[in-house]
Length: 486
Image (cartoon, rainbow, N blue to C red):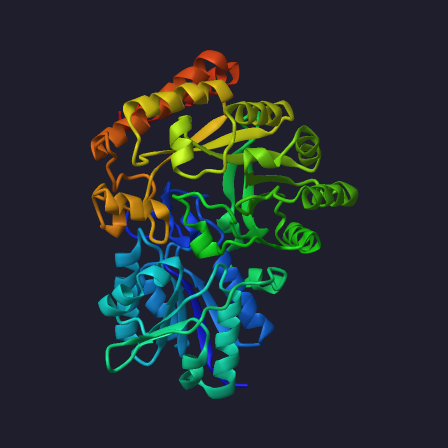
C-alpha cells in the first residue's frame, strides 16, 4: 500500500452566498445564509468512506460548514501537506472555487489538485484552461466509485498511475485533454459510518417546520440517486444518472440508528429525487421504523403520482412530517412543453389534499421562466396554486443547465441572456422568455409569492397566528434596540 496522503476539501462559500453544491443535479444553487443552513455534503461522506474502506491516509476539511477562510485552509494544510487534494466545484461559485484552489496550488505546488462535480463534466476545458487545477474526475454523484478506483490505482502505481482511472481527465503537453469512460455508481450501501467522526455533524442540522409550525432540526441523509424522467429543464439525469439506485432499507435504518446513538439526532431529510417510487420499499421502511420504535421525524421529496392515501398514512405513523412535490407550473400548455410526465390537475389537487389530511406538510416546487412563459401563464399558475393549496411554495427561476433540452431550446431561440455562472443560482433570471424580460421574471416571482401568502393569510388561521407572533417578536426586538440606543 502507498503512503499517499489525501485531503478531501469542501470549499467555503463565496462572499455573500451560501452554496448548496448537491442541488440542481450537482451544479449547485444558492440558499439563505445563517446558522443551520449547511447541507451535509454527501459527496464528502462517500469520498471519506472510500478512503476508510481502502485504509487510505486522509483528512477532511469542511471549510463551508466551519466558515473557514483561505488562510485558515492553508494553515490547516500546512500541518501535513497532502500529495492529493480533492474538491467539489459548483456552477454559481465556480470563479470563487477556481481562485481559491489556485491560491492553494501556489502555496503547495507539489500537491496534485483534483476537482469533481457535475460542472466538471460540461465545462472541463474551461476549468482546466482557467485554473491551475491538475485534473478532473468525471463521474456520477456521489462519486464513490471513481474515488475508490483512484485510491486503488495510486496504491498500485503511485500518482503516475492516475491516467488509467476511469473518468480521470487532465491537460497534456500538446494541449489535448485526455479522458476515460466514467464509472457509474452501483451501490450506496458502501457508506462507512466512522467517517462522521471526521465531520462537524452538528453544523448539518437544517430547520424544517411541521404542521404546527414547530421547528424540527434534520440532517440530510442520502437514500437514493438517479432520475429516469425526461423533463426538459432537469439536470439530475446528467449529474445523478438516469437510473434509480437505492440505498437498502436496512442500511438507511442502520445509518439512522448510528446517528441517534452517536449524535442524538432525531430529524432526517432524505435526499432522493423520488423517495416513494417503490411503494413496497416505502412500506417496508415505515414498517421497520414502527417495529423498532424509532421516534424520529423526517421529510422527503417525490412526485404527486407516486403516493396514495394508504402510503401517506403509513408514512405519517413512521414519522414523516413533510413532503416536497414538484408541480412546476399551473399552465397546461407549459406542462406539456417541458415534457413533465403528464399529471392531471385533479391528481395534483387530490395528492395535496390527502397529504395535509394525513397531517403531513405539503410543499410545492414551482418554476417560472420557461420559453413560452407569459403573464397569462403566470396568472394561471397563481390561480392553480390557490386550488391545490400547498402549505409552502418554493419558486425557482428557470436555469438553462448544460446537458438539458431546455438549454438547447433557449440558445436556439435566442433567449439566453447571461453566461455569468455566478448568476446561475436558480433564483436569478439568466434567460428571458418569448413574452417576458428578465425584470418581468423578477416581478413575476415576487407576485407569485405575494399572492400565495395573501391567500394563505385569508384562508388559513394558522398562518395568521404565526404572522402575528412574528410581528410581536419584531416589535419587541425593535423596542429592545431602541432602549439600548438611549
